[in-house]
Length: 248
Length: 248
DNA sequence: CTTGATTGCGTACAGCGTACGCTAGTGCGC
DNA sequence: GCGCACTAGCGTACGCTGTACGCAATCAAG
Image (tube, rainbow over all chains, first blue to last red; front, side, top):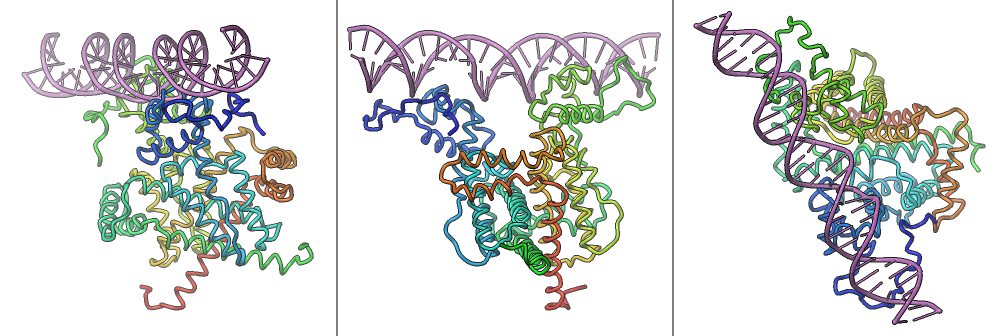
């Protein structure tokens, strides 16, 4: 395993009682406190001083458990990504892929402030690798042929990440869930902005406002996801038809 | 139009010769210099002092043209997004959507360091709105029915953004284009990382390494894109078949 | 009790964005 | 020509950030 940061060679003996009046600092406590702060006040406003204070400790104490802020954030992300691990499932590969994608998206939206860190790049931490390997294995077992497995995985990942990132951003903008009747107001507001853009036909800007103000929700996410899955299934059928002997 | 930052009410009369020995500071010159610095040294390392120096000016001079760093970066992004504006095209909607998506992706990959800023969120700047409105209008004219236009737009946008973001990251990791024979090394390296992850069947990690080490390239991008487009086309056909009178 | 390791802490510093006020140069009205 | 209002450019200074470093307190083992 990769060496722990400042190498806690001898971990506290676990049977020792609370060694200090204040609850002891631990990786887990730091992580969950950091996550709370991020969820509450945003990723950008998190700083080490506030984190120390929220923990009832000093700023620098955190550095006994994490080499630096980047490593801390990485661990927070891993903490969230743990939850993406696929449960036992059955059904054809389409159904499973759908469930997996929805699960990842839900996980990202559970912490919109972290979504950027989660979805912006392919992460190589042990946790991320394990979760992704498990997802890939599910797809393989569910019947996606080996030859199409990479294409399938990356296509669905890309769509899921891309959509969830946009969605997370719109949740960050207004911290409350979209009010039921707000649809009209949204369109009008965007239409007003579009009208102020020079060199734009009013007809065009009207149509664009309708499209761009459309709320990003489950229904719309599933539209794209199902289209993508259906398109891939078509390819799989073709592959099976043309080169059947390639299958084990 | 929205008020210019410090309101340059009277712009320099344009016929005036170079008023100083040093080339005069201007929005455009600042923007292109900033973009060069970002491309060369990365987004994170850009700071106002270095930017001033690269311009042959002082740090604070930039603030005469941009209210703050965020606004500057926004303008840099807009500068790049300008290039996404769709050219005149013809062909069915599938072909046009394909071209548009490829164009956006290419634009993002032309500046991998900026990709995060471009693709992470839906931007509301006049430039972004104009470009997006033009793209939507193209899709509409090419025959995407109004009722499916929002779903179609967001699905393709999400996929394109999501894929290009991942791709940009992998370009940032190694500044050189992927060497032709490096494929095997990539797989082995990832396989080694996966082997070190606990609780992972060697068989599974082997399969995952193949999938995850797959380079993100044109071919793979087009696989997902074409699947998505084909899936959407199927929906459009269905819509036309069931409710035909909805069309104008 | 001594020794060595480990956690928590306070201080201090460098890098960042940028508020503020000064200066020198410009075009306009007289 | 002469001021006048305005502006682009600049230097200084401040507050906030991450974190290097060394000391203090704690505890296990000898």
